Image (tube, rainbow over all chains, first blue to last red; front, side, top):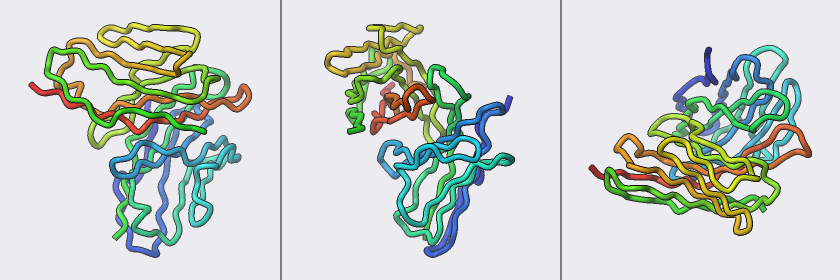
Length: 115
Length: 114
C-alpha cells in the first residue's frame, strides 16, 4: 500500500518563476492538508482540501499561493512568482473521511529552494 | 489563538529517559498527538492520546496529559541513538464534527549522546 506520495522531492526555482508541488494521498483518503516547514521552524498549516473543495485556507498567503484537489488526480500546491522567502519544505498529509482519530499520514515533503 | 509550544532542544545520554513537554491551547481538542521527524523525512505518528485519558503507555513511550494545565508530555524510556529526531506535539482543531486540522508545535530536537 502506497503512502502519501509527493513530487518533486526537491525543486529549485529562480525568483519570479512558478513552483508546482504535487501530492497523491493514501489510496481511499479524500482529505488533504498542506503544511509548510520553514528552516528551524515548526509546521505551519496552510490549507485543508477535500475532493474539489477548499475547506480551510486560513494558513495560505493571500497572494501567489493556490491549492486544488480535483476529482481526478493529485492535489496541487501552486506558488506563482516565487521569492526567496518561499524556500521551505512543503508537506502534504492525508486522512480518510469521517470521524476518526484524526491521524494524518504525511508524505516525505517537497523541498523548494528559490535562488 | 492556535499556539502549541515546546522547548526547542533536549540532549540526553543513551539509556537515560527523555521527557519532552508541550503546552496547547484548544481545550476542546479530542486527540493530542506526538509525531517524530527524522532528518530529511516526513512526519510519522508515534502515539496519540484521547482527551479523556490521563496517561497512555506504549512500549517505551509514556504520554501524560494534564487537561487542567493543557500540558502534554512524552517520556521515552531507555533512549537510544535511533531516537534522535525532532518531536512534534499536535492538537486537533475541529470543524464541528468534521475531520480535524492538526496544529503543530515548533518541535523539540532530541539529541541522544552515546
